[in-house]
Image (tube, rainbow, N blue to C red):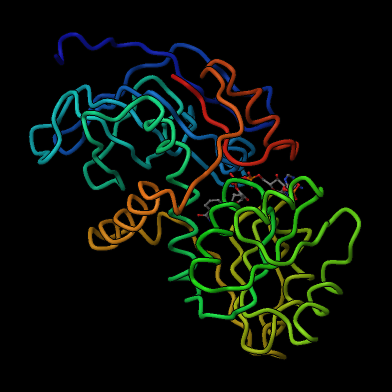
Length: 332
Ligand code: NDP
């Protein structure tokens, strides 16, 4: 089968940092795999906000840089040391470079082999769910271990990560205070588990949080907005609360004095999903939770829209302009 592989494919990449204009959808070499890698012929890939940070240079990368972080597809070639995967196996995986027809995936990457009977619809659902659900599963256990009755403040609550957090937080017994910019988005957050709703376009977030928590503040805040919400989030925490800062949708948090954490003895983390999936034990544990949740329908990421790979630019422009809810997916 290896002989049948093309040497050139279509991929989404950039050669310089910048806005949407630097995105290219053009010919790009098919990656060469090593002994511990597989080559995946992608079928669906998720559209994530993180790609905008790579593109803009907020997170530095090599160049040219092929975008994409999660996909599902079929194994097209297997390195000689790889165990447990064969050509034609269906898999879903987390690896950089997934917005392309072919992606090189190391056998130590977070991945799951899917049943041969998996339908296109299932492959799409897996590609749409990996980053969001695994982020919510790890961040509600590792960054802060949710206890029953905890108040949790959640921003971007109708986005793909937000919907995943609503479900996992509710399942763990937290009382979710959801923030989003429109009432339509808040309705979605509520459907997936939020108990309290704050419309950031017309309400004072801090004032509402203090009302809801009887002046005490929240046990944990999941803040993916970054720069614009840092002060509000810090003020909304209760004594000994935990601030999980995990994104930069409005720009990176501006450097601040550590002593800002002292008055309430708060904890602050700035985690990444990949950092919680570093060992085989961690990957096995969280993928088991992920697959069980997905297959039993107790965890579910609604799909916003499916675009052809060639229209990734349109997909990310809508995501970055706050026009989407749930997850956008590209078909490859
Ligand atoms: P979303 O689907 O959540 O889309 C982003 C949402 O952020 C928007 O819909 C919008 O919701 C909100 N937002 C607030 N301020 C802005 C702004 N200035 N510009 C644009 N959007 C804004 O995206 P994802 O689910 O892909 O990701 C959500 C966040 O989580 C991102 O910041 C991402 O980087 C982060 N993330 C981090 C991970 C990690 O490992 N650290 C892993 C996964 C995600 P609203 O209009 O309701 O405010």
